[in-house]
Length: 95
Length: 366
Image (tube, rainbow over the protein chains, first blue to last red):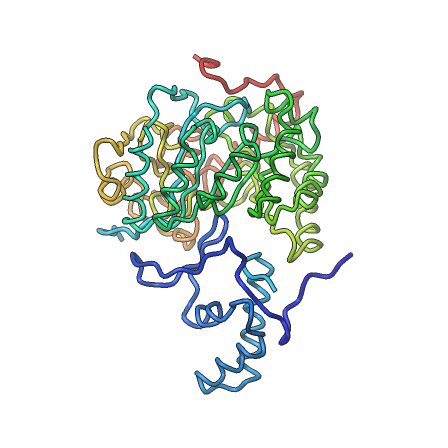
């Protein structure tokens, strides 16, 4: 049995081409469009998703968020990895 | 509790046509099928997509019948995609080929969902009433993946194929699907007519639930499995359509706007058409949409139930089908006086030999 793919600091996350992160004018908020589902990411999730460009590592995403929010790097790392792992399990993020 | 300006809908199910080469006996289309002559034309559908995008709709599901029976499918997908709508094709696949898939990719199609009737051709072609369908579906599923489109496999399950669930999951993996919907047949319209031929035993269902639980763990990160227990064996009702007139709307081939695809079974409601009124006005004001929107229409014990904004009172079409009126408590809920009866129907009908299917075709039921 293969173990499920896991996200780590060295992973390079990206949104697959069929997943669309888009600003919705009608609701005045960001939405994440996926096959047969719509996710409404909160402000922090949007910050993370906007950095999933297929170039930045998880580590550098954590660094930039920790700096922006003046937060402890360890805590930010835990939150970012948890969120990306959850989205990867849902098929919304690839790495 | 009565919202004067409802939130915009998330998704539109566009039933482009009721024409379909398959004759599945659980089809979600109504018993009275629309003929080709009454279908909306290309320009009207394009206007509907313009109105949908302006209203705040984010996704369009192109469905039917078989949507590829429409020669303008590519043009409609292209128009919706240009408006920024996420486009999903819900198809039997039997009318698609490499050329059409290439044109759909160019049009901006985002995702394809293909239904399968069983794990092997003999059973699948018998259930769908169309020789050669299964082989064709697998071939098209591979073309879809080769074209780079994400694929959902929709495995429609019932007593005559539920024991093949493990093989259906393997099929989804082998075809490179990222999602599998394990969709128990629902008992409205054609499914209700064929209920005794379709409803599984409780033992079958329990085994299926075990298989799903194990497969989800085993395939985590590779295959997402959506699974809903069929109502007749549930303790609580499903949040049907995420709540009546809360998130979805459905447009029939002739242009009627419905809160769900089975809503026309509720004879007391009359539905407005996109040919008569703007979509936004129908969504916000149509009496059929207002009728069961929110919680103020609810009977007790729903109205004071702490789950009233979780399941939104379950399914109105089912309340009508079993309780005889559409504002009754959904019998799928264990708080309904008819809940025991629902389980008894399931037990009794699934215990006997399955009757012959009444296949879905125009004029099959008069």
